[in-house]
Image 1 (cartoon, helix red, strand yellow):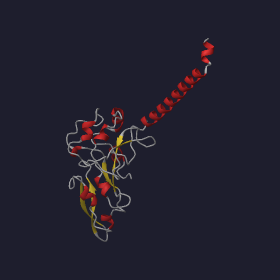
Image 2 (tube, rainbow, N blue to C red):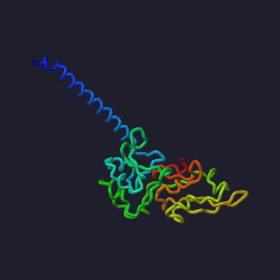
Image 3 (cartoon, rainbow, N blue to C red):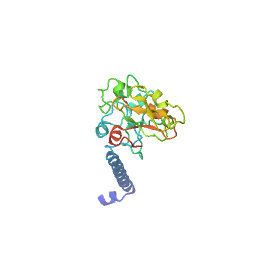
Image 4 (tube, helix red, strand yellow):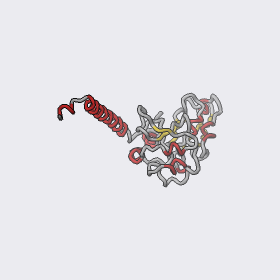
Length: 217
């Protein structure tokens, strides 16, 4: 009787489904493990929301619920899909596409059910989402003389503190160069978003990357 039951079409279909399910779970597990190994670093273009812990701690604390994404009134944040160089399901934004709007009540932090986005962040001006880095001395319109551009300076919500325009001199002329003051920079990305050059001449990088190599693109 047992042999007959094991060989029945219904029994075989059940076993095949179990094997397929186990195989799918294994694949998903491998994918999640691969993304977990990326937790210590972010690509240069991906910026975490305000209040995010250091990357490895953030990736461990974030439960991938998406509540911060839903809470953002400007639809700036998105959750990383498969195939991105960002841990799967975690929130980030791309400054060149859309910067953080620096909400005074920081709704993304309030929505976070864990400490992945730290509740210790009371004032948005204290956020350190990233650090702006002036990377385009050879392309910046203000420096090259193509135009008297101050787009990054004017876009900065902390202009005069996070970004200043400093007088510089070349052999032929004087000019004003955007200068970032990292201690005041929130990493909101408004400067990069506003930059008028085709390839942004000022970029916001994840904090760890900016501090490791301030010239990084």
